Length: 81
Image 1 (spheres, rainbow, N blue to C red):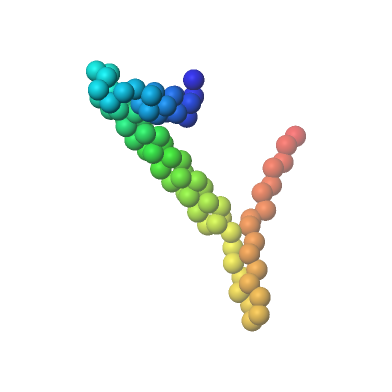
Image 2: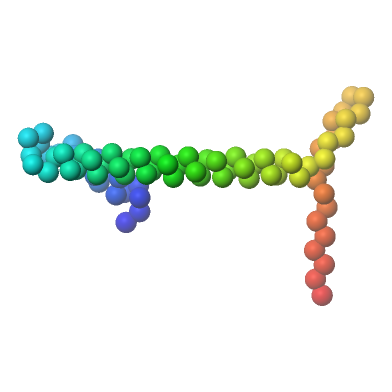
């Protein structure tokens, strides 16, 4: 089971469980914990995507002339024998 389906199942289970049921507080705590984990994972993934984008931009060269800006990246030479 992946993270999203587990999260959605807890959310659905919390909706269907009556407010006075003895398992309701535990289900709510578990649902909230899974939501926090999902948010944390999303934050880390977003940070990694941002770092990857910054690395790609930093590997480029900019040449500014009078009326033009040229963006270049280094040529990668992969020689295989």
